[in-house]
Length: 359
Ligand SMILES: Nc1nc2c(ncn2[C@@H]2O[C@H](COP(=O)(O)OP(=O)(O)O)[C@@H](O)[C@H]2O)c(=O)[nH]1
Ligand SMILES: [Mg+2]
Image 1 (tube, rainbow, N blue to C red):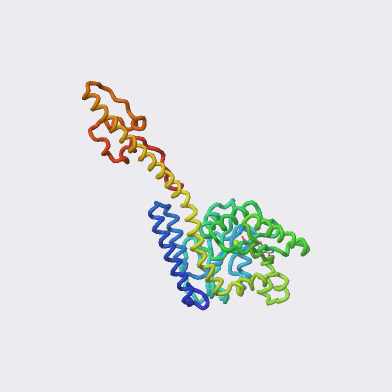
Image 2: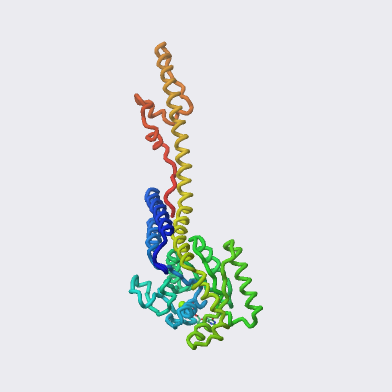
């Protein structure tokens, strides 16, 4: 796992080994239950990422200010900013000293000088908006890879319905979320800004069940101040509290914890998903077991009846009354030795709906 310093303590090493072992077991179990290939793949890639850089991923609706905020973080106008959806790719910022790796048609890698990038890679996403579906799909596909989600909301349209839905999905993946309420400069008074922050904090608490770290910032003012070297304006942008959180509160130990939490969270989500499938298969199996016992006891009764019938026929009387439970297999039993038929074969006579894999 890359971190600063990039060497794991023996205790951390042991934790990583334990997590790998448990998740490898889970992968094997997924194959046995015939799990969706996509789930296996997600788990495999989140395991591979244990060896990758810490990934901070900015998400949120388009025009919330994600690109501007990341530019402020690295102190350069690297990412395009605009009022219309400007980013069509997921963009990964790495340090200039690191080789380019992992660019695809959907993921673009950009290099910057910022020291922050020595410890983590920062990811800009196109945003989640219903208007451009493929953006939304791309972002949702990228969320499982994130170690920390920076959720950017805009102070002038806080916590929309689609933002609420998206937050809930992020939480299902077990991700650590930090919220930035951007465009604080649009609020005319600090009381207004506090009202917006309280609204977002309460909304998120009722949605997710906990209060996440929340920072009100003006990313635009922060970029301008950083580029102009204006420390007063940078202070006024409120950006430094968020930056300090990312740089110092997220110590190497904390980043290690979040990195490890990532594949474990993905694993837990997958376990939750398949638990109900396995449990319904178990119910069906128990029901089958009961049917098998019923048929067995029916066959025993039928054999007894047969034996009695033979005795009676021996005495000159024909006709046999079947034991009620044996009617299902009466036809089979008319063959010489139905009692030796495997019960499972008899069950084929009464096929029932079985649960398939998850849709
Ligand atoms: N007033 C104000 N506008 C901002 C702020 N941050 C970003 N913007 C503007 O919002 C628009 C969208 O920003 P962008 O970073 O491209 O949003 P993204 O789609 O979430 O990446 C741009 O015109 C930015 O200049 C801010 O803190 N205050
Ligand atoms: Mg953008």
